[in-house]
Image (cartoon, rainbow over all chains, first blue to last red; front, side, top):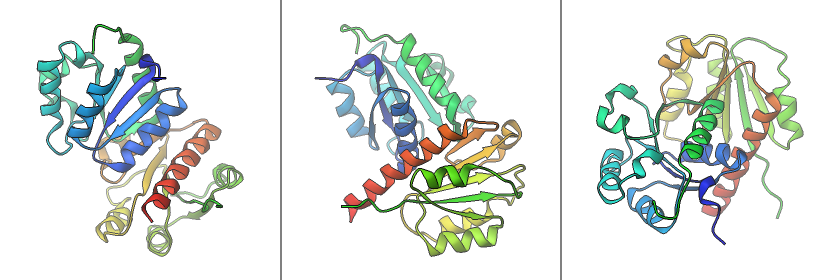
Length: 132
Length: 132
């Protein structure tokens, strides 16, 4: 049986420690977390099931921005589920992306705040069967 | 097969009577404490720690020099680094996200933090066993 999509998160980061922390925090908050470190794995996961939130490292190899562009073109409406993790100032992320996604979190993130933000994002993006 | 005990290093920049070491030990972790950068670096080089907790009142520009040096030494594996501080707004802009993965605002629920640390170290231990 597939996990509840409304509590499912896809986490994408090439930093293993960050992925681990994200997984621990969100699983403790009741989410099911798929954690991957490459764009290819991310796309495979994204195509295989529905996620309430996608947590994406902006600077991962192959550029988080390209992944977002792919989602935007092929899965309209999916950007609202994205939370970007970034080591740089969030204002350096293009405005057209920032205005389309759920949120931007600057690393290092605050543990409690991060969980609250993901929870809010998941609640906003109630997953329906017609929208990937 | 008995799970290997996971080790946590707690670096507090001012002597305190934090209950955290005791709480972590009661949850089955081995905990070492240190008050100086030199000692922290020596400990990191001598033993495998899964997680480094930094309990800092203040962060100076060179407060994390030991950690930078340790990471440049290209040692092992994963080391999750979490900073505890009350001065979060002052400190965050000065933190290198490649050195510190997450921050915790003090005061905080230490019992919850101890559970997070335990879950992180458990996952890291499982990962290490899979790789061996």
